[in-house]
Image (cartoon, rainbow, N blue to C red; front, side, top):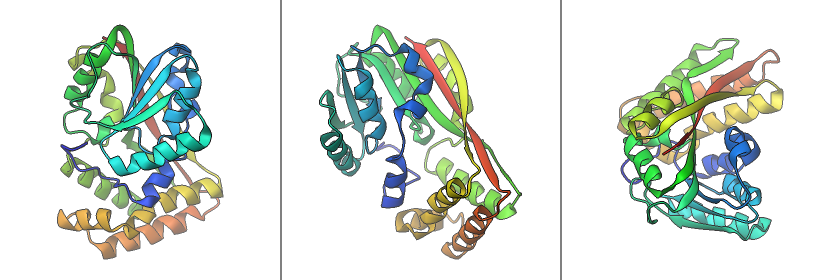
Length: 267
């Protein structure tokens, strides 16, 4: 969103990874509460893969996906046109100042968004404003502090230490997952229901994809430039760390896992 720097960037390696996300996994924690006639707002929708799935969940309703980055919405619209859900629309938006009337939506959903915002409580207050009195907010964010891997490689720890430092200097909070209930309560929501789920990478294909996703950032000029600008690391160090990460992924006994926090609440 415009008040912060998006740590991951919108380069192709990131957008391609985000395009693999599906609602059956990313929004499973709220699926049982979704009605076919709901009007849903997907904030920080990115390339729209989850948004398109949500539209299929509400055949008698409608989904609007919003994102601060106009270029990524090109991919989102193309996906919707290709895949066919017609009860869907995309537009640019500021999470702190949504261009919708009060009490407009049955559900406001945000996946991996709050971790990048410097003022997550203000964003949640804005989500509450556009929710109907009986509406729901559903948010999910990773908790980078729970990341663990085996066999242990100090270079992998260092890789994610750099990322966490950059994320916080960019205005975000990489351990957002554990903070969701607290943030929701501060924003005026009642009795948030908190759950967690995990991502695990254990097969060779899974490990290589995960390592390549992160190591690929060393070839992304916007990410490397920001790391060097902040004095957190250098391109040379990132390249070395990435090589270690990729070599680790080839080990047959290697595993990587971490938690996501999930919360659902009403105004």
